[in-house]
Every structure is written in structure tokens, then in C-alpha cells.
Image (cartoon, rainbow, N blue to C red):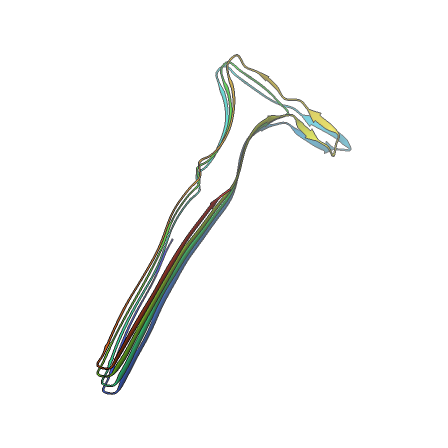
Length: 239
């Protein structure tokens, strides 16, 4: 997503001049997902009886149970503001620019074999992966200028923040199927001549930038004052 704010202003007078400008933008994005690949048996009740429905898989070659999360967010927020003023006696100008970008990815990624019979002529692979990615940028700028025959003041401030969070639960398992409510424990049996590989991997990534710039200038025959402030923050969390 993209969000951009722009503003500009100017003032001029034979006596006093004043200009105030401000611009702000924000970008917010979130993804919540549950992804599962499984070979499972089932326990259920039918006409007062507990039914154990065993799942069986047989293959001449290899067997793979694979799940993968590729959640992706690209976010940009920018705010730019500029102002100027002039007056014969007194003038003042102020400009403020702000931007913020926030992105959240929450994923449950699960690959499992539970309470099933699996036989294969090759390898058995159970794999769960997360490749979630966030690319985020927040940029803010502000500029102010003021000129007067007597007193002049110019102030400019800019702030930018980029906050990004990825929270993943990534599980790959081979386990028995236990149903405590019905007092059932269905065993998993594996028969393969080659390797058994169980892999859970989190390769999530965040690329984030935040930048702020402020410029101001003031000129007066007696008094000239200018001030600038710029701040930026980038916070990234992967759990």
C-alpha cells in the first residue's frame, strides 16, 4: 500500500505575514493466515458409538507433506510540507511533515502426520516453512522560510516511523493421534526404505527504512530566528 501527503503555503503582506502548513500520511497493513497440510486419521461419534477412521497412504515413490507461507506486504508512507512568508515588519512560517507505516503478519503454518499409516518406496518428508516478508518505508520532510524588514521566524519539524511485526508458529510433526475426550490413542506407523525428514523452518524477513528531514531559514534586519527538528524510528520484530 502507498500513502502520500503533501502541503504547501505562502503568505505576504505589507505589515505582517504568517504561513502555517502541515502534511501527514499513514499506511497500515495486516495479514492473518492459517495454513495446514496433513495426513490424519479421524475420531468421531455416530449413533452413540466412537468411530476410529484410520487414514492410510501408500506410494511406490516418495511421500511429501509440505506447507509454505509466502505472505508479503509492501508499504510506503510519505509526508512533505513546505511554507514561506514575508512581511515588511514581521513574518513567521512553520511547516510540519509526518508519516507512519505499520505492518503486521501473523501466521500458523503446520505440516503433520497424526495417527495414520504411511508406506512409501522412497523418502518421507514432512516440511513446514514460513517465507513471510515485509518491505516498509516511511519518509517525512518539512521546509520553512521567512523574510522581513524587521523580525522573522521560521520553524520546521519532520517525523517518520516504521513499525513492523511478524509472528509465526511453524510446526512439522509426526505424532500419534490422541483424543482425550473419547479416550482414544491412534498410533502412527511409518514404513519407508529411505530417509524420514521432518523440517520446520522460519525464513521470515523485514526490510524497513524511516527517514526525516527538516530545513528552515529566516532573515530580518533586526531579528532572525530559525529552528529545525527531525526524528525517525524503525522498529522490527520477528517471533
